[in-house]
Image (cartoon, rainbow, N blue to C red; front, side, top):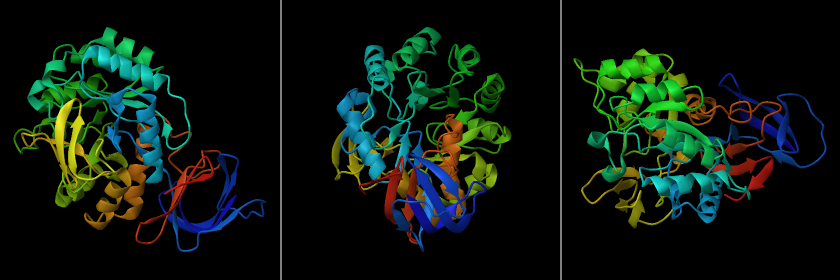
Amino acid sequence: MIIKNADIFTPDHRFVQGDVAITGDRFSTVLEETDGDGQVVDAAGLYMIPGLVDIHFHGCKGADMCDGTQEALDIITEYEASVGVTSVCPATMTIPKDELLAVMKNAGAYSYKGGAHLVGINMEGPFISASKKGAQAAENIIPCDYEYFRQLQDAAGGLIRLVDIAPEEPGAMEFIDRTKSEVVISIAHTVSDYDTACEAIRHGASHATHLYNAMPPLNHRNPGVIGAVRDSEACHVELICDGVHVHPSVIRATFAMFGAERVILISDSMRATGLEDGEYTLGGQPVVVKGNLATLHDGTIAGSATNLMDCMRFVVKNAGIPLEDAVMCATENPAREIGIFDQTGSIQAGKKADFVLLDKELNIVGIYIDGKEQPC
C-alpha cells in the first residue's frame, strides 16, 4: 500500500507533504520515492498522523476494563479503533482485591481479535489516599503492598505498565524502590505536600495522574504535587482535555510550564463514552452522564465521557495549542512513557502501520491498524 501526497507528521514534529509505503503491517518507507505495487490512497489535503495511544481510560460503549470479561475488552478495542485510538492501556479502579485479581487475569489472557492493540494496563488504585479518592471506592483502598502487586502483575502476564500511588501513605517509598524498574510509578489521588512528592520523585516516581484532579491545587506558598512534578524534568503529566476537567486557560498554562514534550493527553473515559446521556457505573458506583460531564450522585466528577481524539481536537480548537504539539502529546509521548515507542507512536520505517488520516478540520477520513483500513 502507498499513501500519496499526505501531510505526514514526522518524528521531528512537523508536517511534511509526501508519500509513505506500507508492506504487510509495517511502514517500509517514509518520504521516499516509491513505485511499489498494491493499493494507492491519494491523501492530498489530509493530515497523516500516528494512531493515538490512550494510557488512561476505563471504558466506552457500555463496557469497562473492570467488567473483567473478554467481551468487554472486545467492545473497548473495537470502539477505540473506530475513533483513531490504535493502542490502549486501560485503567482499573479501586475494587475488592479478588475482583482486581480476576480483572488482571482476564486482561492477561486476552486474545486479540482486531481493533486497537491492548498494550498495557494502568493500575489506578487501590494504593491511594481516601482523602482524594474522587470516584474510587473508599472501602477498597489499601496501603502499598508489593506482594499483592506481584500477584496482580503475574496474573496480567506483565501487562501492568503504570501503578498509581499516594506517596504520603504508609509504605509508599519502599514500594517505589521495589517496582520502579518494572513499571512507571505515578503520583495520584493524593494529599501529598511538595516535600513528600519530591521525595517520591527522588525514589523513582516519574508520572502524575490527571494533573490538577484528585490532588491539592498549586498554591504560591504550598506548591504541592504540581510544583514538585514541575520542578523535575524527569516527570511527565497526564491532562484530561474534555472541556470539563481542566479549563482551556489552565491547559495553555500547563503547556507553558511543562513544555509539550512532558504532557500526555488522556481521555479518562468511562463506559458511557460513545453512548447517550443516562445512568451508568464506574468502579461499582452509580454515575450520571450529561454531555461530557460524568458525576457521582454527590456531584464528584467520575471520569469523562469523551474519547482521546475529541480531547486532542479540544486542545487545538478550544485551547489554541498547535496541532503539532497536540499530536505529539497523544501519540509519541504516551508511547514513550509506557515503553512501546519502538513499535508505535510515530510514522517511521519498521514501525507498526497504525495511522489516521484527518481533514483540515481534524475530522477522521481514514483509520489504519497494522496497515489495514478500519471502520470509522
